[in-house]
Amino acid sequence: MEKWVKDLKTLVGIQLTARQIAAFQRYEDELLEWNSRMNLTAIRDREGIRTKHFLDSLSCILAFRERPPERLIDIGTGAGFPGIPLKIIYPRMKLTLVESVGKKLEFCRHIVQTLKLEDVTLLQARAEALGQDRAYREQYDWAVARAVATLPVLAEYLLPLVALGGKMLAQKGESAHTEAVAAEKAIRVLGGELQQIIPVLVPGIAEERYLVVVDKVAITPPGYPRRVGLPARRPIQ
Image 1 (cartoon, rainbow, N blue to C red):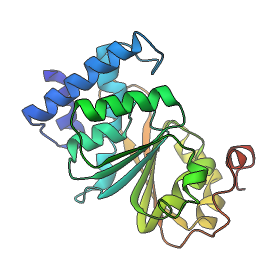
Image 2: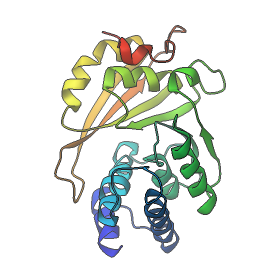
Image 3: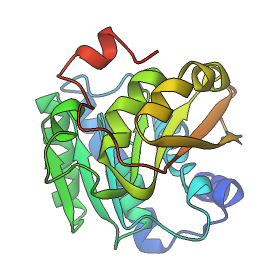
Image 4: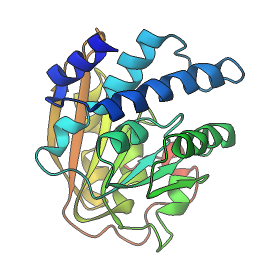
C-alpha cells in the first residue's frame, strides 16, 4: 500500500501510522472476501478499493480543517464509507453508521469488531425516521453521506440530525454546483446555509469530485424530515 499511503498524504496531508495502515489493509482484505460471497460493492479490485473507496472517503478530511468531528453520523453508509475510514483516522470520534440493507450493516459490524473500533453505533434504519427520533435528532456536529441522493433530498436526510452550529457534508460529482442551486430552498427551510463547495482531486479518479458543506444555522422545523419515502418522491422546491 506504499503508493496509496503517499497519495493520501498528498491529498489531505496525513501520514498514517503502521497501525492505521494495517487496519486499512485488513478492511480491504475483508471487503474483497465478503464481496466474493455477496454483492456489497461494485468495486472488486484492490486498486479500486484504495482509490474509489478509501481515498474518496478520506477526502472528507479537507472539510474538517483543524478540528476533527466529535460526533459524526454517516447516512447510507453501505460497506462503511465514508464513516469507517474516517474512524480509523480519528479513533476518538463517536461514529454512527446508518444503513437500511441488512447484509451491508452486517459487514460493517464485522469490520468494527475485527478492527476493534470503539464508540461505533450501527443502525438498520431510514434517515427520515432517525431525524424524528429525539435520541438522534440534532445530536451530531457532522452528518455525512456519499452517493445516496440528490442534494435537495439529502438536505432533508442530514440537516435534521445536525446540532445547531454543526455541519452537513455531501460528497458529490460533477453535478455538485447544479444540485446546490436546486437545493437552495430546501437547505434554507431545514435550517442550513451553504458554506462552500470544495473541489477535490483524488489520485486515481478522473471524474470531478466535490465536498458540499452546509452550516446548520437554525433549528430544523418539527415537520421535517417528512415520513419515510416522501423526501425522495417530493423534494422541497
